[in-house]
Length: 320
Image (cartoon, rainbow, N blue to C red; front, side):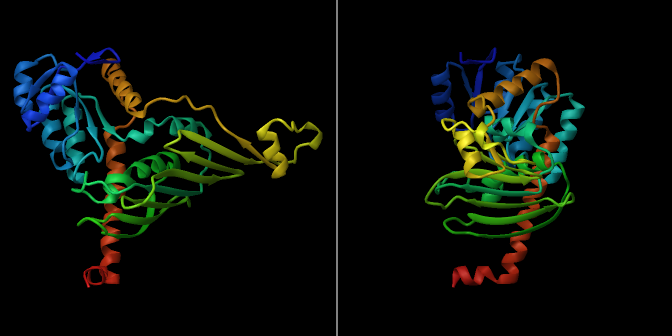
């Protein structure tokens, strides 16, 4: 059986039994058509990954948590805030570890950036992807932008004050491209652009904080920091063979820096983190509260897009 971090994969559950058997055959584990069947056959299951459609998250996680099983729930955490609250209640009642699958939190570039945060005041975020028929049951905000909402909310450490948004359906019946401006109580402002109808793939986050600019590339797992020094470096101290000092010479008073990034597959890091929380009976890195916070922001954005669409009569324009 497949093992990861000291855990054994013992079962795959999918209503499509052909798919369940195919995956189970690949990993050498059992195949089941329902959670109830799996629980009957495997009473010792300790943890499960819930990767069903969002509207089924609560139903699946409820059955698992009531059976004493810890859960890793894919993002978005639930279809509604009421369902997210019910998941939190169930986790408390049954004393279960429940983690939300906001994968970018485990991106090495994000982890390397966290210690650099001081007082971010402006974010510019782009997540562009080519069209794919997957995940068309939700719009681009809940499909893609929610990754960046979670990261920025984590970095900003402030409540949302105001949201303005615009979005359009292009190739599906849902919003496929969106631009959002979020203002926080701290005064920080974040601009987000998300698209699943782009001709290229871009996943970048940039932000400014006092005396510093930080650029994060999710895909390359790379971070660049530019710091404005209080005094210019002495030209005699510059090393002509060092790219960092050459950049400092080209931009006097600005020192570039690339923090060490420990490269790791984010999905493996996420699973390892979840299993560690299960073993140690500790709070996971991405809590249900974190998932609810990102979901609340995303739903506010969806509502704002709807309001703008009605004001601008976009439905008439796109169908005309």
